[in-house]
Image 1 (cartoon, rainbow, N blue to C red):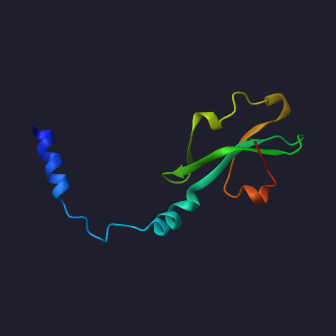
Image 2: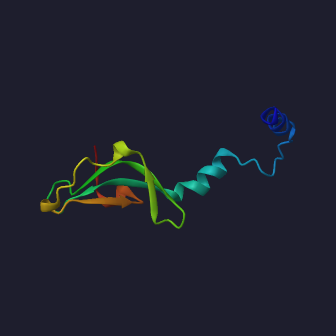
Image 3: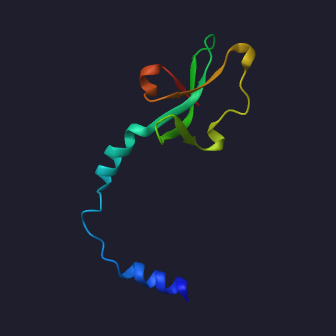
Length: 96
């Protein structure tokens, strides 16, 4: 019964245009948090491989991405590193 009342009240709330942002506004605000996730190995060609995307949250030091974006294994002996870049085009990375 309580759930029905809450749902009914929520559907009766007016949506004020001040709170509604356009898609362009949302993109402008959030695009700075989107990052490229990949690996970097100094002696590989290309050095950087772009595996997917993620986004920064909280203070910008935490990155959220999907599990399939992360490599299954990092080659430590070849100095491979997991990397996060804000602008993949300027890094000369290859897409995989």
